[in-house]
Length: 226
Image (cartoon, rainbow, N blue to C red; front, top):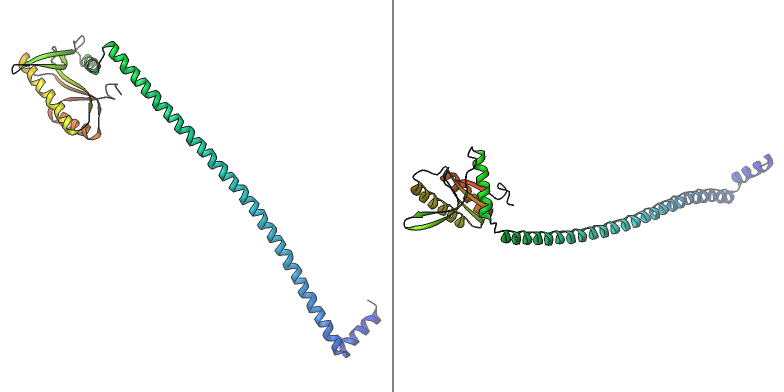
């Protein structure tokens, strides 16, 4: 701007009130427009950020849905595998039981083998262990596990479900141990009760009664049955 134009502009500002007001209004409007431009630029920037975050949220949602689908498929595969394992276990158990029947090999025989090994470890090699019979008050009692030298009396049962059944099994063993004592004229070296499987409450009763009567209690895992 030339010096003359500047002087004329300043002279008008000083002498012409309407011109002075017009210029002031223009300057104020310009400042307002500048502020609006800055605000609009900030708004556009913020809106772009919101759109970016929304796209990321949509992408994350898709990933979550994909993960859930993978989890669902994995769970279905797990259930199918568990079902196949259960079915295979039943087949194996059924086949094993059939094999046992074919070989005439029962749990009582299995328990007798366990007692035989136990006696060998105690220093009685060659001890003969198996089923036997003792006379008691005019009755012949069958004994699941019997060894005459050393004298061992035992009973074996596949499953004990209740405390009452546990008490009955212990009473049965004690009766046969007393009969063997009278028949052989000496105390049994061992009284053994072998149980393949026992429910928790029945197992607790068996343990308490075995401790009270000096009975060697052998559960399924201990004798390798389960």
